[in-house]
Amino acid sequence: MSTADGSNVFGEDLSGLHQTGGVLWGAQNSGRLWRLVPNGSGGWKPDTTGGWTSGKTLRFPGGSGAPDSEGVTVTGSGAAGGVFVSSERNGSGSSRLSVLRYDVSGSGTTLTATKEWNLTASLPSVGSNLGFEGITWIPDGYLTGAGFKDASTGTAYDPGGYGAHTGGVFFVGVEGTGVIHGYVLEDSGAFTRVSSTSSGMAGVMELQWEPQAFRLWAVCDDNCGGQHRTLKVDASGVFAVTAVYDRPTGMPDYNNEGFSLAGADECVNGSKPVYWADDDNDGGHAIRKGTVTC
Figure 1: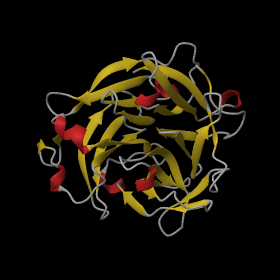
Figure 2: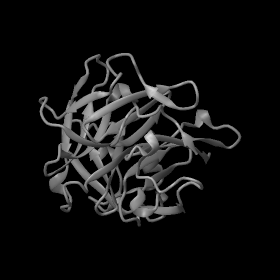
Figure 3: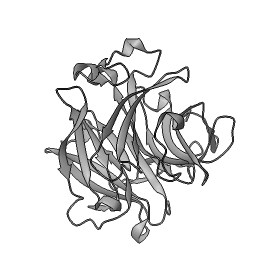
Figure 4: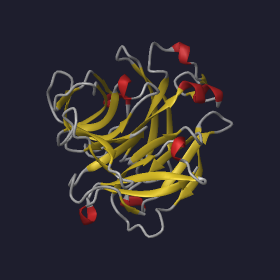
């Protein structure tokens, strides 16, 4: 395990991570999105082009508010299809469990969401700072092939039963309950909850789909000793835990709220890089690097 960023680049509150190709996206609680690029020594630094030098300020649709941005992901279309951020509230206000889509193609330093799916009313109530922490997207192809069951219908998941929806299902993790919820988020703004799965942990701070191994990673922070779990769709059509991992040997019990895996193209001699985001910026570093078997 080693540091993977410069000294005091981000400060506190770097939370969600998601790597796609040569870019690592980072969501910061203060309503900021980072586009990070390789720093030449195995780590990451802010992109200095396109207005990304200090990250970009996030707003709700209409340009208002300050999303408490905790998680970030993209779909099979990559960033060109929008970057999706999970938020648990507006600033330090009451619960607003939302998924927000951002067009990141411009050069301005503020991003206004092009779509919001406010899921608050569809979920059990949680404390305002105990909501969505992680988000990831899983393609319909895996779900149908694995026999995923749609909890809203009680039958096999059928993507054709929904309107246009990015070709997959978004999974969000709730800090206060440790439950992972799956949603079809339609382009129209409609949404349907198609699954709810207990992670078996006190809280979920990050979710990452690993297509190379067809597994869903759920990660907890120092509230669970930095435990990681993987899940796959089982014979009954629901996600079930397949493995439990302690935090890496030699890593202190940091407040790691972000976790991301490199792609299959970076697999060398059976292992590839993984990254953690430390919300507390311990020792002046917010990103650390390790490896995982691939």
